[in-house]
Image (cartoon, rainbow, N blue to C red):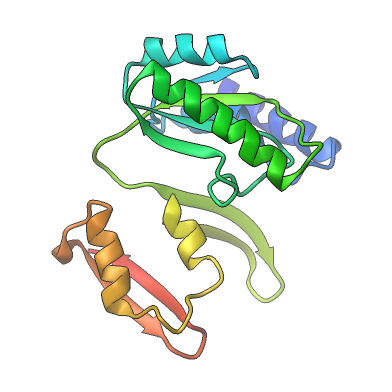
Length: 195
């Protein structure tokens, strides 16, 4: 583990030296694997349809296809993530759609490649992040990942209530008894606690 920690320190120092605030997916995966955190099988591909198709075959269907670009951080919002692709034809069409969507978001988008990833049928997506808060100092963000990051990121609109959030959680595979929802009406935020 010490060797891995030294490699991670080097990786993070390189990101800092190049003024990058966001790591690329390969770097994130390297860090998580160094700490023995299980991840979905993934293959990083160039911006090449044939390589993406071969990688999809290698992983086995269904797969997810995700754009890798420092120009587009919120890929789901931009239509640059396609899920549950079950055939080569679906992957081929998703590849084209993602390229079109990326160019709609930013005409001169720099595409570093694609991530082909196995679709996990059970489990939870989570988000983990670090920040420095002026009041609390160094903090760690940990919560529901995937689409919930976008749904809950700025608080929730007036339409949202605990029942809506509960329906979303159940729809994404959680059981009703697995969680509690606390709604802070002043900040329009929900705190979801897993039991």
